[in-house]
Structures are given as C-alpha cells and as structure tokens.
Image (tube, rainbow, N blue to C red; front, side, top):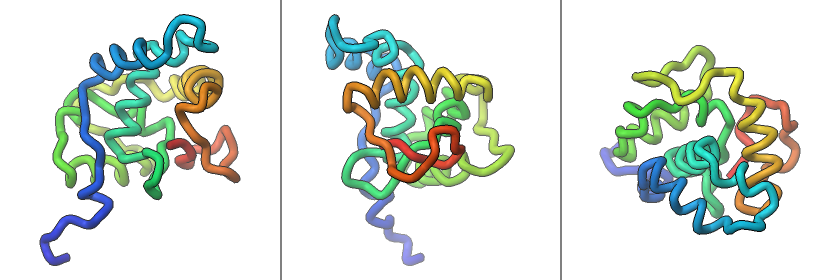
Length: 144
C-alpha cells in the first residue's frame, strides 16, 4: 500500500448521528407511508446509519448484513475516520466480532431488523435494494 486511500475508502458517504437520521426518516416517510413505523423507528435509523457507515449505498459494490447493524455500538459509531469505518465494514462480518462498547441490539434482534425494518419497511417503499440471489435468512450482506 502506498499510503493513499483506496477509491472505496475515499468514497464513503458523510455521516450524521443516529438521532438525526431518525429525524430525517420522519420527514422522508410522511404519514400514510406503508408500514411507516418500520421506516421511522430507532431500528430503522440504526439500519440507515449502519448502511452509511459501511458505505452500502447505491452505485457502490458494497452491501449491508443485519449483523452490521446489531453489532454497532456508540463507541464504534463515533469512530468516523475512513480507515476505521472500512475496518468495521470488514471485521463486523466475521464470527465472534465485538466492537468496543455496548452493542445497540442483541443477536436475536436480526429477525425484527430483517423482517420488519428491512423487508416490510425500507425495502417495501423502495428505500433499500436487495442483492439478487442471497437468501433472506442468509447471514451474508444483501442490502444497499
């Protein structure tokens, strides 16, 4: 490595904190949005924050796995440098990974995250896309 940031690291999107993400979700998804509560609750804000944190956004070759949301911590979220975010993006997918601090959600939170927040909320309204060919129950990343 020459000391220069790779194009993927350099292209990570900007971040706002989880509370600001949630405030914005309430503006983006007005009353009447199908399953609005799944699109605007704290878990949705956590999901969108984690997607931005790891760079799982349209036009990039990176997708999010639910474990990257429920393994996030406030201490990790405060590490906003590109290299720190890139490291989390990779390490959080490995078995027994633990970010510093108290996790936002327990392992068993993956079902409401996957089924309600993603499938019935953000995917249903077109805010999140799904990588074809990855099973819903797979632990592999599949959303951007």
